[in-house]
Every structure is written in structure tokens, then in C-alpha cells.
Image (cartoon, rainbow, N blue to C red; front, side, top):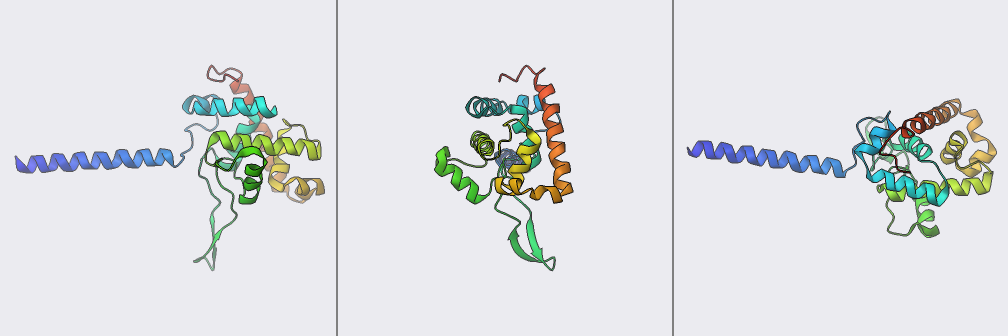
Length: 203
């Protein structure tokens, strides 16, 4: 009898550990299950709807455009970071860059956003702050380069290279980046068509 009680307690303890680990995994920002379906993404994560709606109202950027860019940058993993670099394959040198969060914003650019109206409490792993940051950055791109806010391909190129780099045409020597920008544009069209027939999309 005592043995059975001990087994039962051990089983209960194991279940509680698994529950805690599962909840921690969710907090740490796992990706939605079906990243190829925009309706599935926002149905699984309804908090995204408000974030995309606010960015559209404030900056005029379409949800499908933001979603395609977030997919490319972080696969919707809220705490995504760039990989570590190693010398000789074993000596850690730090991460490739300071890019972090949904939007993969760099430390310096994020601090500029915080000073420019985002507020010092804004967090890169918060979908509301991340989408507001992207809208803010893209609207400045419109002002400085003339790229329309919903021109996904060129907005992505300017987002990746920086506005100065885009104006200098640095992307032209990077065939891989041009290919990715075309893929981001294609995904934005896919997401737009899916959202048009999605009950959860209340934009």
C-alpha cells in the first residue's frame, strides 16, 4: 500500500513537472503550428489580430505584408535570436548579430524606436510592440525612399539592408537576398488570399 502511494506521488510529481515545462515552452515563444496558413496562425494566436489591426490603422500596412515579413524574420518565434558563432568550430564568439524577437530588430534600431515613440517598456518579444516597430520602420522607409508601404518586396529589401543600403543598391549584388525578397512578396499574396476568406480576420 505504501509502495502504491509512493508510486502515485512520483507519477503526480512527474505530471506537474511536464505541465510546468509545457507552460514554460509556450511562454518562450513557440511558433504557431501551420505557418503556411494565415487563417490558422491567427486562429491559434488570436492576440495577433489586435496587433495587426493596430498597425494597419496607425501606419496603413496590410496584415498579410507584416505576417510575411515576420515569417521570414523569425517564423513567429517571439524570442528568436541569430545563431552563435564559433572560431575553429569550438570557441564561442557570440551571436551573429543582436537581432531578437518577432521582427529580428537590432539593439540600436530598437533603441531608436523606443526613443521615437515606442516607449522604453516596449519589448521585441511582444507581438504588439514588434508589429508597431515594423510599421514605424516601414513608414520611415516610405518617407526616405518613396517605397509604398505595402510594396512587400522592396520594403523587405530596405528592412534587411537598411534604408541607406537600399538606396545604394547593396542588394543588387546579393542574388540570394533578391530571391528571398521575391519569396516574401509571394507569401504576402498567399496570406492575403487566405485572410480574405478567414472568419477570424477582423481587420
